[in-house]
Image (cartoon, rainbow, N blue to C red; front, side, top):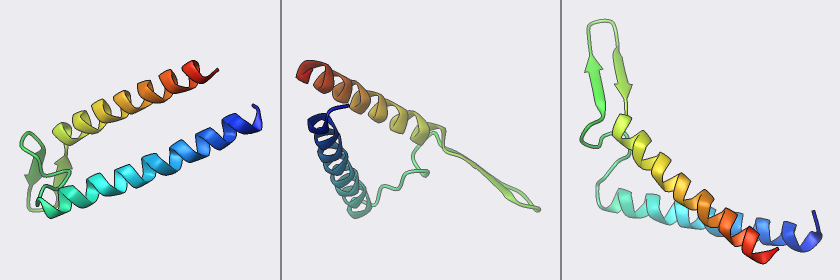
Length: 79
């Protein structure tokens, strides 16, 4: 892998990390917490609790799929 592609990858990774931090910050300000969306399953019993955030998992999966496709398109276009 040439140095120019490594630099692009590091730059994009940094921008993505900043973007994720910004989105998380906005969600916190809007009082929306991942894991407590409508459709997430939370069961509580005498001996413990079970939390299965199915809606949150689907939302994160869709966002990551879009992001990975954009990154793949960017690197194929740049080659």
